[in-house]
Length: 477
Image (cartoon, rainbow, N blue to C red; front, top):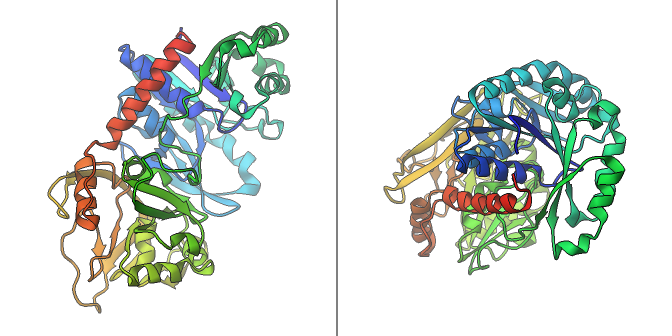
């Protein structure tokens, strides 16, 4: 039985907290329970726009979709978006609230607890159940003081905790036991059960280990969740997916440039799921060669990623790709890189500000503005066909056609700009490929390729239902 508030924590990052929280949200929602996800503190450059005009981590967007509710900034009140090795943009209740230095990370979190609690209380009043996702692991004594992500929040909100261990990594019983041993008595008492995640094979292989763990700790093993290796949900934490395509590994080759500060890497999941498309994330000039389509994705620090792109030779590979007939699409920061120049007069990406020449493949100039633009989009495309397209915009940049370059300015929504030869396109719209009819129209226009028309959100819902079915069997909630 799920209590009115429950926190899922993990023995490590990647233990499956996000997916299991989403699966439980889906399971409860299917039973008619009004359920909402919540993550007090997140760190990710994969963000989504909310119904109240803020931004949250994509994990909470996924969980809200699973719960059948509109994503709201209260679902992830504190979001750190890394900009460089030692700095991050701070988002509080959906809005930019400053910049965080790594050296002050521990001290800067605790003052944000009141806002996190405020958001949590609003959700508790509005929903029957709130499922709370922790971050990383609670067994980090160096981070316990001032913690608002794991046991610090659990104590403040007085909520029980399930601890998740990933058996696929190996050593799951040691991880669960060791995590419990690191906690002090008060935190340890909040652990109401263990969940063993991603188990492969016959349950008999576990032998008496779960019973031994229960005897040593006094904490029950609530369930063993089998692995779903073919489960494909949007990933929040992965910087880029280097594995093979989810589709058939088809003949259309798409290379997504994975620069160091890549953001919103799951913008391409819908393409990746197409049976005739092979999507790869690439980091070398050599890997660009042979692609039919090169995509420059979003970036949390456009100027430095543009410099990286040049330093590793990808700029020249990209220009060669276009010269020989290849196609390019830039999304958000990638759109800005493709223009004539990029200016940062207000120091949005660093106190000193700066400017750089762009790749010169689109006739636009971009200036970074102090106010971040956030907008959900759902309307009819002007090009390549009048079909529904949806997504969201989240950026500091303002891009305009360069007045010294002839042409341009035509309505090609959802694209902002297109090169004279039609080979290069740029858009500010994240989740550009999610709409099935639009994706189909675009692939036909660019490559003469027939594709499916399923919307990405429906595919994700189907995957969430599979996960919910599995949790119902394996945990028995």
